[in-house]
Image 1 (tube, rainbow, N blue to C red):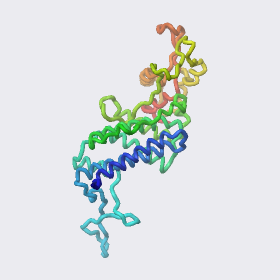
Image 2 (image 1 turned 30 degrees about the vertical axis):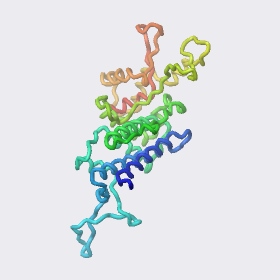
Image 3 (image 1 turned 135 degrees about the horizontal axis):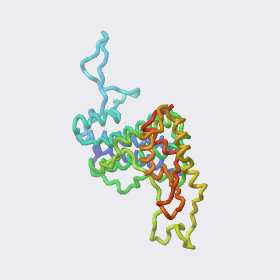
Image 4 (image 1 turned 180 degrees about the horizontal axis):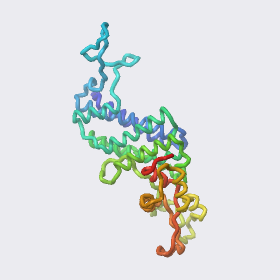
Length: 329
């Protein structure tokens, strides 16, 4: 029995997303983030079209673009005709029109957080294709959008079609295993990449507040060491076990990640922003950001006594937070 057009679109969508993941997870790929964004959005567009067809009795005319033709006297016809491409095949709607059609015609509920994630992915794709290439220092931000995209995709495919994706490995390999994300600095980004990072940060700040359990704009990437009972697991020395491989963090290692003290951070902010002032607003933002260990490392006079005198050191990545409040020069 022949498959429906909706099923064909769904199968192609899943194939596109699997290809996006496989391409992203290649050990050495110089166009990783760009390729993923293109293929992942293709997968989403096919998925949305599959839903439209499922709700519209597999009528392909629901996906076509229509236009009025110009008559010989220069006026436009009242009748609309199917718009065709250079090969004379019917042109179909894109991802934006597909989203609008589903919402306007109430074919399905689409969460605003899911839409925000797709907008972020579209921005990554558009900048990648038309303007810039993503550097390693923007890779972590892009990956967090990509991981949320996969989570949202699995959720929607399951809700709309009951399609079982458990047979596939829907994950993006944590790049921290072979890229030193902790040393990534916003200072190494180009002006254009900073604009992309700021745009993505603003969308995430608006929607990722923990209130939505099913969908996300970004998923934070953290790599942690975890105990394992498996005999084949690598043993890392976090104590005095003589059988484990020792890991040592020197003072130089820590200062390389958190190079600025309070004075140096303040000077950096003065140089960076046109409207920066050392006032209560600055101190409030700094103290709020200091709760995040990605941005601040506290060094205690007595390491065993958390009540002893301490000095805070700041990562350059804390500039991402201040970018939300101040204007760049």
